[in-house]
Image (cartoon, rainbow, N blue to C red; front, side, top):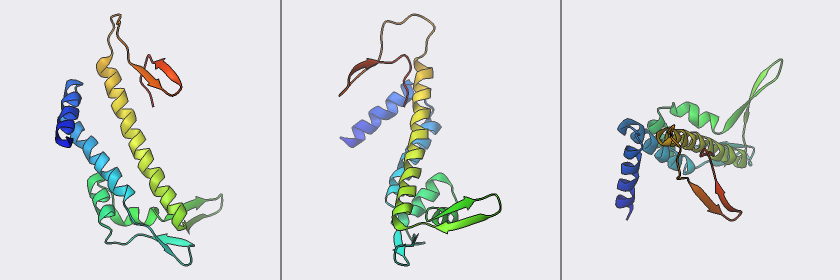
Length: 151
C-alpha cells in the first residue's frame, strides 16, 4: 500500500529528526527528478540539434518545483557551452547528447539529495558511547559492515 509506505517513511524521517520543511523539500526534489526524466526532447535538423516544447508539462513542473527559470532550463538541456582561451561557444546538442545530459542532471540531483539524507542519518545515529549494534549490507559480493554510511 503506497499510502501506508509513505506514512512509514514520514514517520522514519521524523524519528531521525528530519524537520517537516526538509521532508517537504525531499519530496519536491524526488517529484522534480521524476518529471525531469519525462521531459520529451525532440530531434531537429537531421539529428544535429534538439529542442523541448515550451508546452512540455514535465519541464514546467520540474522548473516550478525547483524554482528554476523555464527558458534557461529549456535552452541548456539542449545546448552546451564550450569555453576556450579566446572565445566562448554555445553549441547545439544532438538528441542523444541532450537525453544523456538530462539523465546526468537527474542523477546528479538525486545523488546530492541522497548524500544529504545519509549525512543527516549519520548525525542522528552518532553517539559517543560504545555501541554494540551496526548496519550490515548483504549483496552479491558478500556481507559488509560500515562504520559510516556512504554513497
